[in-house]
Length: 191
View (cartoon, rainbow, N blue to C red):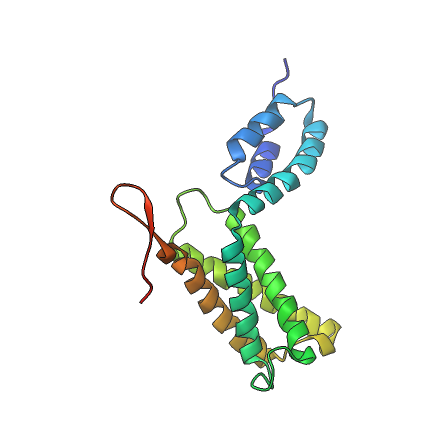
């Protein structure tokens, strides 16, 4: 019977696996252990699929649409000439790119939230981190292809607005359905 993977390697692999699936995936990798190199190869093959699966499980279409709309709206409002058209080519392409980057970052980070640890503060930090990633990508895009980028001021203003809108959209997700005392759910009345 084999000893198992080196503790350092197993610890690194454990960090890469979303918390909700960590124990079962580490157990499966342990069962298939045939040596350190084989363990690493098995982990490299397995972990991306586990992360993608967890991302799909955490995504709700309503939330993704709300976040995408909030992100696009925030960057479009901050864009030069935004009052003329939200869908003008010079505005739409950079805003859509930044929104997509932030949305992927949000969904990815959400996959790593520990079950039962979804607090309003954590949602705010996730929103801020995702928008910071999008703004950093926007800055890189501005260097590589200035025609596809928003000005720095628009990135900053749009980033602040986007972080606030996404944070409130995510935190407000619980306002649509509230728990009844008997454990069921009911639709709340939005004032």
